[in-house]
Image (tube, rainbow, N blue to C red):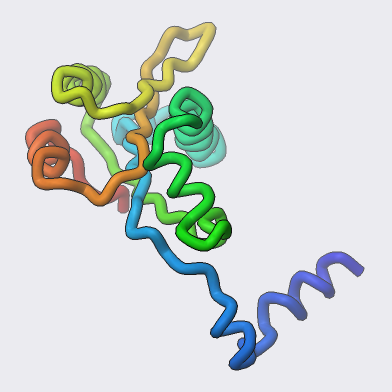
Length: 148
């Protein structure tokens, strides 16, 4: 019954009322950066888990930050319905660590996820933001590109 309900919900045409009641986007985006070199030895599922770990950790660590609160609540109390995330990649561990150092130096809130017990840095999440030029410059310098 549940899968049938999901299908019905996902294929239902939006009504005028539903469109009028849609949550309003904030323009904030959380960037999640993964190491591309891990794909050769890690299956897709564990890579997705690394992204989830980093996103959850940054959300927990910065729960009281105004941008995180706005990202989750939105301007109308329903920000969780219109969250935006961008998954990016860097080539390797050196680039990921360098990115974390550059973000720390610029005082941009983020979290570098280190998988244990391997002590392997795998992913990094940046607090939701509107991608200011200063952040774009740091991401570009680290060799970040859209994960494809």
